[in-house]
Length: 66
Image (cartoon, rainbow, N blue to C red):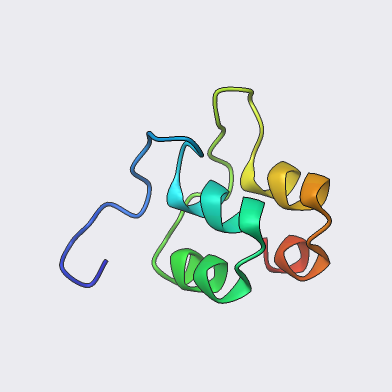
């Protein structure tokens, strides 16, 4: 990200880095991505946001961050 990678790049199994971090409950990564401007409203192929993903997985702290 410090070298110019797109924080909102789409693709892969989780749609975005924020979705992946949210799915796995990685609070520090979620915070970093948000600090770098990740779009909290971005949706995956099922029209779910990272908030939906974190909530479905039971990651309360990630939900609070989002």
